[in-house]
Amino acid sequence: MAGSVLWQAGAEWEVHALSRGPALLEREGLYWYTLADPCDPARLRRLLQDIRPHAIVHTAAIADIDYCEAHRDLADKINVGLTQTLAELCVELGAKLVHCSTDNVFDGEHAPYREEDAPGPVNCYAETKVAAERIVLALPVPAVVARLAAVVGLPVLGAGNSFLSRMRASFEHGREVGVPPAEVRTPVDVITLGQALLELAGDAHTGIFHLAGNDILNRYEMVRRIAARLGFSEGLVVPNDPTGIPGRASRPRDVSLDNAKARNHLKTPMRSLDDGLALILDAERRLVK
Ligand SMILES: NC(=O)c1ccc[n+]([C@@H]2O[C@H](COP(=O)([O-])OP(=O)(O)OC[C@H]3O[C@@H](n4cnc5c(N)ncnc54)[C@H](OP(=O)(O)O)[C@@H]3O)[C@@H](O)[C@H]2O)c1
Image (tube, rainbow, N blue to C red; front, side):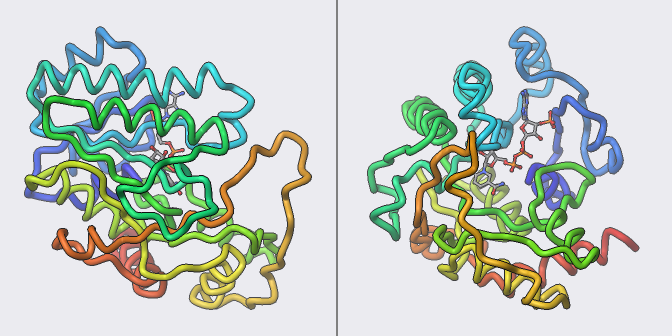
């Protein structure tokens, strides 16, 4: 996701990327790049004092739900502690904070969810994201909590967590992909997300925004549609029930997000899954050239 923001910021922004790994170096030139661990607060402070950003788009998190459940202290340190540090630095520097949160803050039993609905976390990951939201929403500087629905995208800058690229690799090898029909989501493509996060960083918007696609789909329907769009047999997609897998954290059932606020207030259009997939494949073609 960070890659989509960096790739699309273009000439409009002077963009600085901060990452612990070299993957983003691949396209250095599109943006300034610093290899650093954001969990070193003194280093982070010096860096940001040098850059003096207008806005910070905070995408860093441990987003693996099962990993968070098994590593609660680390999940708390990264998802909450780092947000707290960035929030304090935003106050000090007068920068706007655009924080990436998740549809998973909701309990999954009262969808579709609007921005003002009360969170009800059902796992450790969601608890940390709710705690981070509270920090951001209490800030005395302009701040946005962008709650992202399930993200569909390819790692445009050679980095990132992409179930689409893992799934495509399975399809290419003729392997079946099992997905739970019980989980309902409003998938959003990573290109639209990058555009919307940049708009939220640059314009006067504050508060909570739901960034979600226009289609409400269970994961099984979603992946079948993706398989067809990528030119693979929908028969490679099989329903499964992962609830009994040892160590698997609870997932909320239906966290469909109502995206009316984003549709009414942002210039970036919220899109259908098919239109989002078209954007992703077009971006991939342009990057490969
Ligand atoms: N993917 C989704 O479907 C989805 C849905 C809703 C919300 N979100 C939210 O969107 C944001 C980005 O998600 P993503 O899927 O793109 O996540 P990701 O690729 O798994 O991780 C985002 C970044 O967090 C940083 N990070 C991870 N562990 C860290 C650690 N131990 N110490 C320091 N930094 C660490 C990494 O930065 P470097 O490796 O570059 O240092 C990583 O690239 C997250 O806030 C997530 O909660 C994602």
